[in-house]
Length: 489
Ligand code: SF4
Image (cartoon, rainbow, N blue to C red; front, side, top):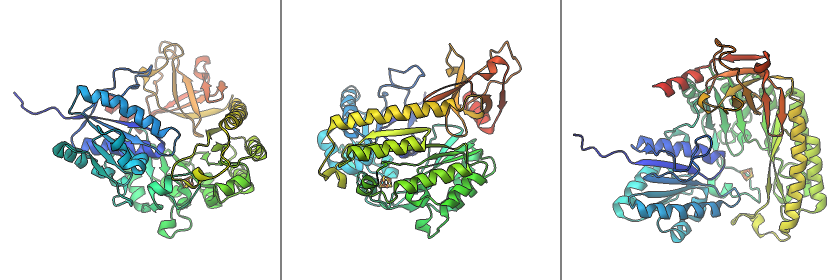
């Protein structure tokens, strides 16, 4: 009889942005490399089987964000739930990492003394050792470093998707936007060597990935740290030429540093997708100045014009903050005007909320909440109508979608699978009944499907062409193969 103890289980909950989600993959990879196993989902699950409550794991890691609104409220809410779980499982350990951990370090242990480990954005690699030390010493461990010593991309990773992967090209930011805490928490920009990035992409392709998203706080300043002026455009070209890569995306570029060589690379490299997410933040030059965003409205609109000239089908999306301190009705009207002219495919809209430790938090003239809410509704209403019209204009087009759903998760009523088109739009695809077209392969996650858009809504497209004998071409991919191998092994 084996006397081996079962491996301890872990769960990671991400409370933040894409950068955090990518860091969570690394946290999972680190824990698995240290012998932990993923915990089964929590007792409550949503319609697609995703966990809606904290799972019962031996180690729960909360990967926090200080950029998103209500981050602290969400963190302490989660910690409250975990305090109860820990009473029933005293061997459970709780770790808090990410930007808010970096910012609040000691406060977290003061407010939630049942937390075992607090680690910062630069000390992720130490997590398994910190958990062991906390258990051994029976004392909370706090490890925060102000600067990066190990580039996070060199850490083990457990990726969420078989066909798509994030590739971190830089960390940190040299800008000083007055509403943002990132430069304080993630430090100055540090760029990875391009050869290292390309080697990571090649390794991802060998594991089945066909789509990569280059990730950085300001992807297009990439190369500055390496004394290269065309660093990002060159990197896009090299990434797009890696054999086996079908799609390259990137997020997010900064308008001040957006150069025409990047537009040329986007237009000329067939694997670089016709999609651009570029934060506007405000349409008022006065507010942009107060935000310390070093571009103005005309420059922003000029970039959009040049991108659309070079890549007519590009779907352009943005971020907008409403109610920055001092924003007047006429400043807001300028934002609405830019949004009207820019015709974004979609926009992430935020109501300004002060982040402690940022210059804007102490500015006088904070916009009253009722004014902010009213402006926010007007902006959302405008953008929704534009998104709806822009999506309607897609009807009749043939798009190529990489399927992200597993066949078992299709909607039983409509038999639709979902995925992203080349321009990043979400597409729901009807698949024909098996008896109607028995020889037709059912696309697997990672396979590509050509379909015609038949209907639209503000946030997605419907492609039901297969039901009427229209376009429906499935291209099996290495990613689909990898998914099938993984599923059936
Ligand atoms: S560019 Fe501005 S908003 Fe973006 S990470 Fe840097 S400081 Fe923050």
